[in-house]
Image (spheres, rainbow, N blue to C red):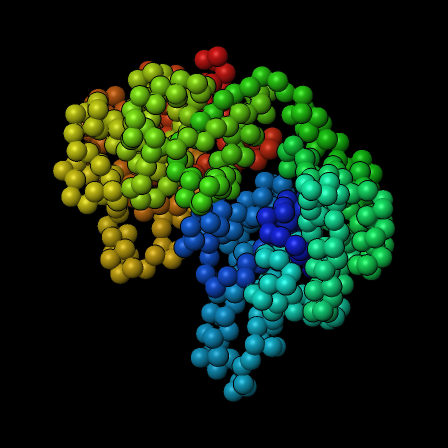
Length: 540
Ligand code: GLN
Protein backbone atom coordinates (compact mmCIF):
# COMPACT_ATOMS: atom_id res chain seq x y z
CA UNK A 1 0.00 0.00 0.00
CA UNK A 2 1.41 3.38 -0.97
CA UNK A 3 0.13 5.84 1.61
CA UNK A 4 -0.22 9.54 0.89
CA UNK A 5 0.69 11.86 3.74
CA UNK A 6 -0.84 15.16 4.79
CA UNK A 7 1.34 16.83 7.40
CA UNK A 8 -0.23 19.45 9.64
CA UNK A 9 2.01 21.95 11.44
CA UNK A 10 1.10 24.86 13.68
CA UNK A 11 2.27 28.42 13.93
CA UNK A 12 2.03 31.47 16.23
CA UNK A 13 0.41 29.82 19.25
CA UNK A 14 -0.57 26.47 20.62
CA UNK A 15 -4.20 25.56 21.11
CA UNK A 16 -5.44 27.01 17.82
CA UNK A 17 -7.26 23.80 16.91
CA UNK A 18 -4.69 21.97 14.82
CA UNK A 19 -6.23 18.70 16.00
CA UNK A 20 -9.65 19.74 14.72
CA UNK A 21 -8.18 20.91 11.40
CA UNK A 22 -6.34 17.58 11.05
CA UNK A 23 -9.43 15.54 11.90
CA UNK A 24 -11.65 17.64 9.61
CA UNK A 25 -9.36 17.20 6.60
CA UNK A 26 -9.29 13.48 7.40
CA UNK A 27 -13.07 13.30 7.46
CA UNK A 28 -13.41 15.05 4.09
CA UNK A 29 -11.00 12.57 2.52
CA UNK A 30 -12.66 9.61 4.19
CA UNK A 31 -15.99 10.72 2.68
CA UNK A 32 -14.32 10.57 -0.73
CA UNK A 33 -14.14 6.81 -0.18
CA UNK A 34 -10.53 6.37 0.99
CA UNK A 35 -9.20 4.65 4.09
CA UNK A 36 -7.79 7.36 6.31
CA UNK A 37 -5.79 7.23 9.50
CA UNK A 38 -3.91 9.77 11.61
CA UNK A 39 -0.74 10.06 13.67
CA UNK A 40 -0.05 12.62 16.39
CA UNK A 41 3.54 13.48 17.12
CA UNK A 42 4.25 14.90 20.55
CA UNK A 43 7.67 16.37 21.21
CA UNK A 44 7.86 15.65 24.96
CA UNK A 45 10.16 13.06 26.52
CA UNK A 46 7.31 11.25 28.30
CA UNK A 47 6.77 7.86 26.68
CA UNK A 48 3.03 8.50 26.76
CA UNK A 49 0.48 10.97 28.11
CA UNK A 50 -0.36 8.72 31.06
CA UNK A 51 2.16 10.35 33.37
CA UNK A 52 1.09 13.91 32.58
CA UNK A 53 -1.28 16.12 34.54
CA UNK A 54 -4.56 16.59 32.62
CA UNK A 55 -5.01 20.14 33.92
CA UNK A 56 -1.81 21.09 32.13
CA UNK A 57 -1.77 18.80 29.14
CA UNK A 58 -5.45 17.98 28.60
CA UNK A 59 -7.22 14.66 28.82
CA UNK A 60 -5.41 11.34 28.66
CA UNK A 61 -7.24 9.53 25.86
CA UNK A 62 -7.32 5.73 26.15
CA UNK A 63 -7.30 3.63 22.97
CA UNK A 64 -8.80 0.14 22.52
CA UNK A 65 -5.33 -1.40 22.88
CA UNK A 66 -4.72 0.42 26.17
CA UNK A 67 -2.60 3.34 25.00
CA UNK A 68 -2.61 6.42 27.22
CA UNK A 69 -2.45 8.99 24.47
CA UNK A 70 -2.80 12.64 23.61
CA UNK A 71 -6.36 13.98 23.54
CA UNK A 72 -6.05 14.67 19.81
CA UNK A 73 -6.38 10.93 19.17
CA UNK A 74 -9.85 11.24 20.65
CA UNK A 75 -10.68 14.02 18.20
CA UNK A 76 -9.45 11.85 15.30
CA UNK A 77 -11.50 8.86 16.47
CA UNK A 78 -14.65 10.95 16.83
CA UNK A 79 -14.29 12.63 13.42
CA UNK A 80 -13.03 9.62 11.46
CA UNK A 81 -15.16 7.05 13.30
CA UNK A 82 -12.22 4.62 13.55
CA UNK A 83 -10.30 2.96 16.40
CA UNK A 84 -6.65 3.97 16.56
CA UNK A 85 -3.63 2.10 17.93
CA UNK A 86 -1.49 3.37 20.77
CA UNK A 87 1.49 3.69 18.43
CA UNK A 88 -0.40 6.41 16.52
CA UNK A 89 0.80 8.79 19.19
CA UNK A 90 4.56 9.12 18.71
CA UNK A 91 6.65 10.90 21.34
CA UNK A 92 10.31 11.90 21.53
CA UNK A 93 10.63 9.50 24.47
CA UNK A 94 9.50 6.51 22.40
CA UNK A 95 11.81 7.39 19.53
CA UNK A 96 14.93 7.79 21.68
CA UNK A 97 14.08 4.72 23.75
CA UNK A 98 13.97 2.57 20.58
CA UNK A 99 17.13 4.04 19.07
CA UNK A 100 19.10 3.52 22.30
CA UNK A 101 17.74 0.01 22.66
CA UNK A 102 18.77 -0.84 19.07
CA UNK A 103 22.22 0.63 19.64
CA UNK A 104 22.71 -1.58 22.73
CA UNK A 105 21.70 -4.60 20.63
CA UNK A 106 24.29 -3.77 17.96
CA UNK A 107 21.51 -3.25 15.44
CA UNK A 108 23.38 -0.34 13.83
CA UNK A 109 26.31 -2.66 12.97
CA UNK A 110 28.96 -0.77 14.88
CA UNK A 111 28.12 2.61 13.30
CA UNK A 112 28.33 5.84 15.27
CA UNK A 113 24.67 6.44 16.18
CA UNK A 114 23.77 10.10 15.77
CA UNK A 115 20.79 12.39 16.14
CA UNK A 116 20.79 12.82 12.35
CA UNK A 117 20.13 10.50 10.54
CA UNK A 118 19.11 7.93 13.15
CA UNK A 119 16.38 9.81 15.00
CA UNK A 120 14.46 10.90 11.84
CA UNK A 121 14.97 7.34 10.49
CA UNK A 122 13.15 5.92 13.50
CA UNK A 123 10.39 8.56 13.17
CA UNK A 124 9.83 7.60 9.53
CA UNK A 125 9.84 3.88 10.38
CA UNK A 126 7.17 4.42 13.03
CA UNK A 127 4.89 6.46 10.77
CA UNK A 128 5.15 3.96 7.90
CA UNK A 129 4.60 0.95 10.17
CA UNK A 130 1.35 2.42 11.47
CA UNK A 131 0.11 3.12 7.93
CA UNK A 132 0.82 -0.48 6.90
CA UNK A 133 -1.01 -1.86 9.93
CA UNK A 134 -4.01 0.37 9.28
CA UNK A 135 -3.88 -0.20 5.51
CA UNK A 136 -4.21 3.55 5.13
CA UNK A 137 -4.48 5.19 1.73
CA UNK A 138 -4.12 8.55 3.46
CA UNK A 139 -2.40 9.39 6.71
CA UNK A 140 -2.70 12.72 8.49
CA UNK A 141 0.43 13.52 10.51
CA UNK A 142 -0.05 16.26 13.08
CA UNK A 143 3.13 17.69 14.54
CA UNK A 144 2.59 18.89 18.10
CA UNK A 145 3.97 22.16 19.37
CA UNK A 146 4.53 25.33 17.37
CA UNK A 147 6.97 26.06 14.56
CA UNK A 148 10.01 27.69 16.09
CA UNK A 149 10.00 25.35 19.08
CA UNK A 150 13.28 23.62 19.68
CA UNK A 151 11.65 20.27 20.42
CA UNK A 152 9.85 19.37 17.21
CA UNK A 153 12.68 20.08 14.73
CA UNK A 154 13.73 16.42 14.36
CA UNK A 155 10.19 15.36 13.54
CA UNK A 156 9.91 18.08 10.90
CA UNK A 157 13.26 16.96 9.55
CA UNK A 158 11.89 13.40 9.19
CA UNK A 159 8.85 14.69 7.30
CA UNK A 160 10.97 16.91 5.06
CA UNK A 161 13.08 13.86 4.21
CA UNK A 162 9.98 11.80 3.43
CA UNK A 163 8.93 14.31 0.78
CA UNK A 164 12.48 14.40 -0.64
CA UNK A 165 12.51 10.60 -0.80
CA UNK A 166 9.49 10.68 -3.10
CA UNK A 167 6.73 9.71 -0.67
CA UNK A 168 3.55 11.62 -1.50
CA UNK A 169 3.65 14.33 1.18
CA UNK A 170 1.93 17.69 1.37
CA UNK A 171 2.21 20.26 4.14
CA UNK A 172 -0.67 22.20 5.69
CA UNK A 173 0.35 24.99 8.04
CA UNK A 174 -2.23 26.22 10.56
CA UNK A 175 -1.59 29.60 12.15
CA UNK A 176 -3.35 32.13 14.27
CA UNK A 177 -4.24 35.63 13.09
CA UNK A 178 -4.82 37.92 16.09
CA UNK A 179 -7.24 40.84 16.04
CA UNK A 180 -5.89 43.08 18.84
CA UNK A 181 -8.67 44.99 20.57
CA UNK A 182 -6.94 48.37 20.32
CA UNK A 183 -6.49 47.97 16.54
CA UNK A 184 -9.64 46.10 15.59
CA UNK A 185 -7.73 44.74 12.60
CA UNK A 186 -6.67 41.20 11.72
CA UNK A 187 -2.87 40.93 11.65
CA UNK A 188 -0.95 38.54 9.40
CA UNK A 189 2.64 39.23 10.49
CA UNK A 190 2.99 36.45 13.12
CA UNK A 191 1.72 33.94 10.54
CA UNK A 192 4.19 35.24 7.96
CA UNK A 193 7.01 34.86 10.49
CA UNK A 194 6.02 31.30 11.33
CA UNK A 195 6.08 30.35 7.63
CA UNK A 196 9.58 31.85 7.40
CA UNK A 197 10.62 29.63 10.31
CA UNK A 198 9.16 26.62 8.52
CA UNK A 199 11.04 27.61 5.35
CA UNK A 200 14.29 27.81 7.30
CA UNK A 201 14.04 24.11 8.08
CA UNK A 202 13.43 23.29 4.44
CA UNK A 203 9.65 23.05 4.36
CA UNK A 204 7.41 25.09 2.08
CA UNK A 205 3.74 24.66 3.04
CA UNK A 206 1.31 23.75 0.26
CA UNK A 207 -1.66 25.20 2.14
CA UNK A 208 -2.20 27.77 4.87
CA UNK A 209 -5.16 27.49 7.24
CA UNK A 210 -5.85 30.76 9.02
CA UNK A 211 -7.38 30.43 12.46
CA UNK A 212 -9.00 33.54 13.82
CA UNK A 213 -12.14 34.76 15.51
CA UNK A 214 -13.33 36.13 12.13
CA UNK A 215 -13.15 34.94 8.50
CA UNK A 216 -10.13 35.93 6.42
CA UNK A 217 -10.77 38.69 3.88
CA UNK A 218 -9.31 38.93 0.35
CA UNK A 219 -6.86 41.71 1.20
CA UNK A 220 -5.18 39.61 3.87
CA UNK A 221 -5.40 36.47 1.78
CA UNK A 222 -3.41 38.19 -0.99
CA UNK A 223 -0.89 39.46 1.51
CA UNK A 224 -0.34 36.01 3.05
CA UNK A 225 -0.10 34.51 -0.41
CA UNK A 226 2.61 36.92 -1.48
CA UNK A 227 4.70 36.77 1.69
CA UNK A 228 4.30 33.04 2.34
CA UNK A 229 4.70 31.85 -1.25
CA UNK A 230 1.34 30.04 -1.33
CA UNK A 231 -1.30 30.65 -4.05
CA UNK A 232 -4.30 32.72 -2.79
CA UNK A 233 -6.58 29.78 -3.57
CA UNK A 234 -4.56 27.62 -1.22
CA UNK A 235 -5.08 29.91 1.76
CA UNK A 236 -8.06 28.49 3.66
CA UNK A 237 -10.05 30.52 6.14
CA UNK A 238 -11.00 28.88 9.43
CA UNK A 239 -12.85 31.30 11.72
CA UNK A 240 -14.30 30.27 15.10
CA UNK A 241 -17.44 28.15 14.81
CA UNK A 242 -20.13 27.13 17.28
CA UNK A 243 -19.33 23.41 17.13
CA UNK A 244 -16.06 21.86 15.96
CA UNK A 245 -18.08 19.48 13.76
CA UNK A 246 -18.85 22.48 11.53
CA UNK A 247 -15.25 22.63 10.35
CA UNK A 248 -15.38 19.86 7.69
CA UNK A 249 -18.29 21.54 5.81
CA UNK A 250 -16.61 24.92 6.27
CA UNK A 251 -13.53 23.51 4.50
CA UNK A 252 -15.60 21.76 1.87
CA UNK A 253 -17.27 25.02 0.88
CA UNK A 254 -13.79 26.38 0.14
CA UNK A 255 -13.11 23.24 -1.97
CA UNK A 256 -10.18 22.41 0.33
CA UNK A 257 -10.53 18.66 -0.17
CA UNK A 258 -10.68 18.96 -3.93
CA UNK A 259 -7.51 21.10 -3.86
CA UNK A 260 -5.69 18.57 -1.66
CA UNK A 261 -6.62 15.68 -3.94
CA UNK A 262 -5.53 17.71 -6.97
CA UNK A 263 -2.03 18.04 -5.44
CA UNK A 264 -1.87 14.23 -5.47
CA UNK A 265 -3.25 14.17 -9.05
CA UNK A 266 -6.56 12.74 -7.84
CA UNK A 267 -10.16 13.62 -8.67
CA UNK A 268 -12.76 14.93 -6.26
CA UNK A 269 -16.29 13.47 -6.08
CA UNK A 270 -19.12 15.95 -5.47
CA UNK A 271 -21.87 15.53 -2.90
CA UNK A 272 -20.15 13.33 -0.30
CA UNK A 273 -20.91 15.55 2.69
CA UNK A 274 -24.72 15.49 2.60
CA UNK A 275 -25.18 13.34 5.70
CA UNK A 276 -22.67 15.36 7.73
CA UNK A 277 -24.29 18.63 6.59
CA UNK A 278 -27.72 17.50 7.67
CA UNK A 279 -26.33 16.49 11.08
CA UNK A 280 -24.92 20.02 11.50
CA UNK A 281 -28.14 21.67 10.36
CA UNK A 282 -30.08 19.56 12.84
CA UNK A 283 -27.91 20.42 15.85
CA UNK A 284 -27.90 24.11 15.02
CA UNK A 285 -31.70 24.18 15.14
CA UNK A 286 -32.09 22.49 18.53
CA UNK A 287 -33.79 24.56 21.21
CA UNK A 288 -34.75 22.19 24.05
CA UNK A 289 -31.98 22.46 26.67
CA UNK A 290 -30.56 19.81 28.99
CA UNK A 291 -28.55 21.20 31.90
CA UNK A 292 -25.72 18.91 33.00
CA UNK A 293 -23.41 19.63 35.92
CA UNK A 294 -19.97 18.04 35.85
CA UNK A 295 -18.68 17.82 39.40
CA UNK A 296 -14.91 17.78 39.66
CA UNK A 297 -11.83 19.83 40.38
CA UNK A 298 -10.69 22.09 37.60
CA UNK A 299 -9.23 25.20 39.09
CA UNK A 300 -5.68 24.01 39.38
CA UNK A 301 -4.25 26.15 36.61
CA UNK A 302 -4.19 29.78 37.73
CA UNK A 303 -7.45 31.61 37.12
CA UNK A 304 -8.43 29.53 34.12
CA UNK A 305 -10.37 26.32 33.81
CA UNK A 306 -8.99 23.78 31.43
CA UNK A 307 -12.08 22.06 30.10
CA UNK A 308 -9.82 19.97 27.89
CA UNK A 309 -9.11 17.72 30.85
CA UNK A 310 -12.56 16.14 30.31
CA UNK A 311 -12.99 16.68 26.58
CA UNK A 312 -14.29 13.17 25.83
CA UNK A 313 -16.91 13.50 28.60
CA UNK A 314 -18.06 16.82 27.15
CA UNK A 315 -18.23 15.44 23.62
CA UNK A 316 -20.11 12.35 24.84
CA UNK A 317 -22.71 14.61 26.52
CA UNK A 318 -23.12 16.53 23.25
CA UNK A 319 -23.51 13.37 21.15
CA UNK A 320 -26.15 11.98 23.52
CA UNK A 321 -28.05 15.28 23.64
CA UNK A 322 -28.09 15.64 19.86
CA UNK A 323 -29.36 12.09 19.42
CA UNK A 324 -32.22 13.01 21.74
CA UNK A 325 -32.90 16.29 19.93
CA UNK A 326 -31.68 18.38 22.83
CA UNK A 327 -29.09 21.09 23.26
CA UNK A 328 -26.49 20.55 25.99
CA UNK A 329 -25.88 23.20 28.59
CA UNK A 330 -22.84 22.10 30.56
CA UNK A 331 -21.70 23.70 33.81
CA UNK A 332 -18.57 23.08 35.89
CA UNK A 333 -18.99 22.61 39.58
CA UNK A 334 -16.03 22.60 41.94
CA UNK A 335 -16.71 19.86 44.48
CA UNK A 336 -14.61 21.60 47.11
CA UNK A 337 -17.35 24.21 47.63
CA UNK A 338 -19.62 21.45 49.04
CA UNK A 339 -16.94 20.61 51.60
CA UNK A 340 -16.70 24.24 52.70
CA UNK A 341 -20.44 24.89 52.76
CA UNK A 342 -22.82 21.90 52.56
CA UNK A 343 -25.76 24.27 51.97
CA UNK A 344 -24.45 24.87 48.45
CA UNK A 345 -25.43 21.27 47.60
CA UNK A 346 -28.94 22.53 46.90
CA UNK A 347 -27.49 24.22 43.79
CA UNK A 348 -27.49 20.75 42.23
CA UNK A 349 -31.26 21.10 41.88
CA UNK A 350 -30.59 23.54 39.04
CA UNK A 351 -29.36 20.66 36.89
CA UNK A 352 -31.37 18.09 34.99
CA UNK A 353 -28.60 15.61 35.70
CA UNK A 354 -25.06 15.36 37.06
CA UNK A 355 -21.89 13.51 36.13
CA UNK A 356 -18.96 12.60 38.36
CA UNK A 357 -16.08 11.89 35.97
CA UNK A 358 -12.82 9.99 36.50
CA UNK A 359 -10.13 11.25 38.81
CA UNK A 360 -7.23 10.46 41.10
CA UNK A 361 -6.21 11.31 44.66
CA UNK A 362 -8.12 12.75 47.58
CA UNK A 363 -8.60 16.39 46.64
CA UNK A 364 -12.28 17.34 46.40
CA UNK A 365 -13.37 13.75 47.02
CA UNK A 366 -15.58 14.34 50.07
CA UNK A 367 -17.48 17.03 48.15
CA UNK A 368 -18.06 14.61 45.28
CA UNK A 369 -19.34 11.96 47.71
CA UNK A 370 -21.75 14.53 49.19
CA UNK A 371 -22.96 15.45 45.71
CA UNK A 372 -23.63 11.79 44.90
CA UNK A 373 -25.59 11.39 48.14
CA UNK A 374 -27.62 14.48 47.28
CA UNK A 375 -28.42 13.14 43.80
CA UNK A 376 -29.38 9.75 45.25
CA UNK A 377 -31.77 11.19 47.84
CA UNK A 378 -33.26 13.87 45.59
CA UNK A 379 -33.82 11.71 42.50
CA UNK A 380 -31.44 13.75 40.35
CA UNK A 381 -30.22 11.66 37.38
CA UNK A 382 -26.61 10.68 38.03
CA UNK A 383 -23.89 9.07 35.94
CA UNK A 384 -20.59 8.05 37.55
CA UNK A 385 -17.50 7.34 35.47
CA UNK A 386 -14.68 5.24 36.94
CA UNK A 387 -13.79 7.24 40.09
CA UNK A 388 -17.40 8.41 39.93
CA UNK A 389 -18.54 4.80 40.40
CA UNK A 390 -16.04 4.12 43.17
CA UNK A 391 -17.22 7.20 45.08
CA UNK A 392 -20.87 6.19 44.59
CA UNK A 393 -20.08 2.82 46.19
CA UNK A 394 -18.40 4.61 49.10
CA UNK A 395 -21.40 6.91 49.54
CA UNK A 396 -23.79 3.96 49.53
CA UNK A 397 -21.64 1.97 51.96
CA UNK A 398 -21.43 4.87 54.40
CA UNK A 399 -24.95 6.20 54.27
CA UNK A 400 -27.12 3.21 53.38
CA UNK A 401 -25.14 0.25 54.74
CA UNK A 402 -23.99 2.19 57.81
CA UNK A 403 -20.30 1.40 57.26
CA UNK A 404 -19.28 4.70 58.74
CA UNK A 405 -15.64 4.94 57.77
CA UNK A 406 -16.01 3.27 54.34
CA UNK A 407 -13.47 4.51 51.83
CA UNK A 408 -11.09 3.66 49.02
CA UNK A 409 -7.57 2.68 50.06
CA UNK A 410 -6.44 5.24 47.48
CA UNK A 411 -7.79 7.92 49.85
CA UNK A 412 -7.32 6.30 53.26
CA UNK A 413 -4.99 3.31 53.52
CA UNK A 414 -6.15 2.50 57.05
CA UNK A 415 -9.89 2.69 56.55
CA UNK A 416 -11.91 0.15 58.56
CA UNK A 417 -14.05 -0.58 55.52
CA UNK A 418 -12.01 -0.60 52.30
CA UNK A 419 -14.99 -0.96 49.96
CA UNK A 420 -12.73 0.13 47.11
CA UNK A 421 -9.34 -1.50 47.10
CA UNK A 422 -6.31 -2.00 44.91
CA UNK A 423 -5.96 -5.24 42.95
CA UNK A 424 -3.26 -7.57 44.38
CA UNK A 425 -1.20 -7.40 41.17
CA UNK A 426 -1.45 -3.60 41.21
CA UNK A 427 -0.19 -3.40 44.79
CA UNK A 428 3.22 -4.71 43.79
CA UNK A 429 3.46 -2.29 40.84
CA UNK A 430 2.76 0.72 43.08
CA UNK A 431 5.21 -0.47 45.75
CA UNK A 432 7.91 -0.66 43.10
CA UNK A 433 6.91 2.79 41.72
CA UNK A 434 6.36 1.39 38.22
CA UNK A 435 3.63 3.89 37.39
CA UNK A 436 3.90 4.28 33.59
CA UNK A 437 1.36 2.30 31.50
CA UNK A 438 0.63 -0.16 34.31
CA UNK A 439 -2.99 0.55 35.21
CA UNK A 440 -5.82 -1.70 34.04
CA UNK A 441 -5.88 -0.15 30.58
CA UNK A 442 -7.85 -0.43 27.34
CA UNK A 443 -10.83 -2.50 26.24
CA UNK A 444 -12.23 -5.14 28.58
CA UNK A 445 -15.36 -7.21 28.16
CA UNK A 446 -18.18 -7.31 30.69
CA UNK A 447 -21.22 -9.58 31.03
CA UNK A 448 -24.52 -7.83 31.66
CA UNK A 449 -27.43 -9.20 33.65
CA UNK A 450 -30.80 -9.29 31.87
CA UNK A 451 -33.56 -7.21 33.40
CA UNK A 452 -31.25 -4.43 34.60
CA UNK A 453 -31.23 -0.84 33.35
CA UNK A 454 -27.65 -1.16 32.11
CA UNK A 455 -28.55 -4.27 30.09
CA UNK A 456 -31.50 -2.52 28.49
CA UNK A 457 -29.35 0.51 27.61
CA UNK A 458 -26.69 -1.58 25.87
CA UNK A 459 -29.26 -4.00 24.49
CA UNK A 460 -26.92 -7.02 24.69
CA UNK A 461 -25.46 -9.59 27.10
CA UNK A 462 -21.80 -8.85 26.52
CA UNK A 463 -20.18 -5.47 25.95
CA UNK A 464 -16.70 -3.98 25.84
CA UNK A 465 -15.57 -0.63 27.22
CA UNK A 466 -12.21 1.05 27.81
CA UNK A 467 -10.61 1.24 31.25
CA UNK A 468 -7.97 3.21 33.12
CA UNK A 469 -7.74 2.53 36.85
CA UNK A 470 -5.92 0.61 39.58
CA UNK A 471 -8.68 0.24 42.16
CA UNK A 472 -11.82 -1.93 42.15
CA UNK A 473 -14.91 -2.68 44.22
CA UNK A 474 -13.70 -4.95 47.04
CA UNK A 475 -15.39 -8.38 46.56
CA UNK A 476 -15.62 -8.78 50.37
CA UNK A 477 -18.33 -6.09 50.50
CA UNK A 478 -20.52 -7.07 47.58
CA UNK A 479 -23.01 -9.10 49.59
CA UNK A 480 -23.46 -6.31 52.14
CA UNK A 481 -24.00 -3.71 49.41
CA UNK A 482 -26.41 -5.89 47.45
CA UNK A 483 -28.45 -6.66 50.55
CA UNK A 484 -29.16 -2.96 50.96
CA UNK A 485 -30.29 -2.59 47.35
CA UNK A 486 -27.21 -1.71 45.31
CA UNK A 487 -27.32 -3.67 42.04
CA UNK A 488 -24.24 -4.82 40.14
CA UNK A 489 -25.67 -5.28 36.64
CA UNK A 490 -22.37 -6.02 34.90
CA UNK A 491 -19.23 -7.91 35.87
CA UNK A 492 -16.00 -9.04 34.23
CA UNK A 493 -16.49 -12.36 32.37
CA UNK A 494 -14.92 -14.29 35.29
CA UNK A 495 -17.41 -12.60 37.62
CA UNK A 496 -14.75 -11.09 39.90
CA UNK A 497 -14.71 -7.41 38.93
CA UNK A 498 -17.76 -5.15 39.31
CA UNK A 499 -17.99 -3.07 36.15
CA UNK A 500 -21.36 -1.33 36.72
CA UNK A 501 -23.72 -0.31 39.51
CA UNK A 502 -27.32 0.92 39.45
CA UNK A 503 -30.18 1.72 41.81
CA UNK A 504 -33.45 0.33 40.42
CA UNK A 505 -35.80 2.65 42.34
CA UNK A 506 -34.00 5.83 41.24
CA UNK A 507 -34.92 7.66 37.97
CA UNK A 508 -31.29 7.21 36.85
CA UNK A 509 -28.50 6.25 39.18
CA UNK A 510 -25.94 4.43 37.04
CA UNK A 511 -22.17 4.25 37.21
CA UNK A 512 -19.39 2.27 35.60
CA UNK A 513 -15.81 1.35 36.36
CA UNK A 514 -15.07 1.99 32.65
CA UNK A 515 -14.81 5.16 30.58
CA UNK A 516 -17.63 4.87 28.03
CA UNK A 517 -16.98 8.46 26.95
CA UNK A 518 -13.99 7.29 24.88
CA UNK A 519 -16.19 5.33 22.46
CA UNK A 520 -18.91 7.94 21.94
CA UNK A 521 -19.13 9.34 18.41
CA UNK A 522 -21.47 11.86 16.76
CA UNK A 523 -24.56 9.94 15.72
CA UNK A 524 -23.51 6.95 17.89
CA UNK A 525 -23.82 8.09 21.50
CA UNK A 526 -22.44 5.98 24.35
CA UNK A 527 -25.40 4.01 25.83
CA UNK A 528 -24.95 5.22 29.43
CA UNK A 529 -24.82 8.88 28.32
CA UNK A 530 -27.86 8.30 26.14
CA UNK A 531 -29.66 6.86 29.18
CA UNK A 532 -28.69 9.84 31.32
CA UNK A 533 -29.98 12.39 28.80
CA UNK A 534 -33.24 10.44 28.33
CA UNK A 535 -33.72 10.42 32.12
CA UNK A 536 -33.03 14.19 32.24
CA UNK A 537 -35.63 14.82 29.54
CA UNK A 538 -38.19 12.59 31.26
CA UNK A 539 -37.76 14.51 34.46
CA UNK A 540 -38.30 17.91 32.82
N1 GLN B 1 -8.31 6.69 40.94
C1 GLN B 1 -9.14 5.58 40.59
C2 GLN B 1 -8.35 4.33 40.28
O1 GLN B 1 -7.18 4.38 40.01
C3 GLN B 1 -10.05 5.94 39.42
C4 GLN B 1 -9.33 6.23 38.15
C5 GLN B 1 -10.17 6.93 37.10
O2 GLN B 1 -11.17 7.54 37.42
N2 GLN B 1 -9.75 6.87 35.87
O3 GLN B 1 -8.90 3.24 40.29
